[in-house]
Image (cartoon, rainbow, N blue to C red; front, side, top):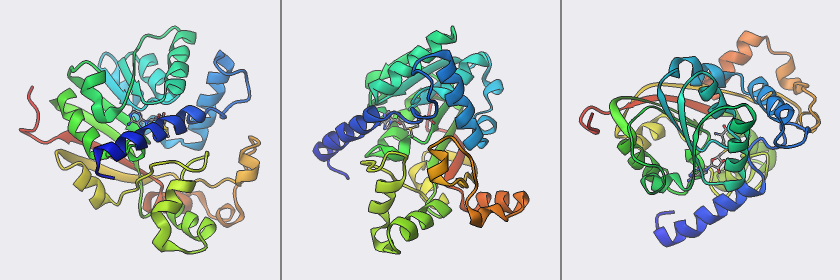
Length: 282
Ligand SMILES: C[S@@+](CC[C@H](N)C(=O)[O-])C[C@H]1O[C@@H](n2cnc3c(N)ncnc32)[C@H](O)[C@@H]1O
């Protein structure tokens, strides 16, 4: 996916995909856009992905400038704002961004919202230095992730922190997709992962990375910590009905063993990084 012309059409597909079904939009059955709806979306998201609040560490960013790339419905964005951060968000999907804006409005919070492609960040978001650049589950969905990390540098001062989640190559989810959906056709792994990575099938772009792959992608940044988390343990047919029953093969596992397994084969690679000295100016 190197050619720009090709990428131009791929990015349109990515936008259309997330506009069709914004991420987590079915996390509640309450009327979309109401306070009850957003509360339920948040409760379900952090119930199913309980590692997020600790990773984002919302309280730490009180009084600091946070740039979130790919806010989706804004579950994390509002929590940065609630904690007292000065929040700016960008998302490619207007449908998602409208709901994110609405969410800030419903809870009486302030933020700045930009619609656009993070690969062209500086054409969309005014260039300023941020304390935190946060992006959870986004950059692996854009056709040219290198461009995003190249752009981010303009928003960094030497002490800026990056907290990024990218999908993991060596993960239970990838094995499960290849063997469950792909009947073991590991040579079709990229296509299978794209097709089945999300709740809505057929994501146009889904990359997934080893720790070495993350370091290569983020070569202009010092990756200070890498860790894996998140194995989805629920029966999907029940989960879509808001029932949370574990699949039989995880049910027997003592929690410490399951957590050990998540740290080795989790789908979410959590990345803490800073720009390399000399790469950005103060
Ligand atoms: C899986 S959702 C994650 C949303 C949110 N971070 C969360 O955790 O709920 C991916 C989001 O990334 C956005 N996205 C994908 N490619 C993008 C790009 N090139 N620029 C900006 N946003 C992008 C999509 O529109 C979508 O809202």
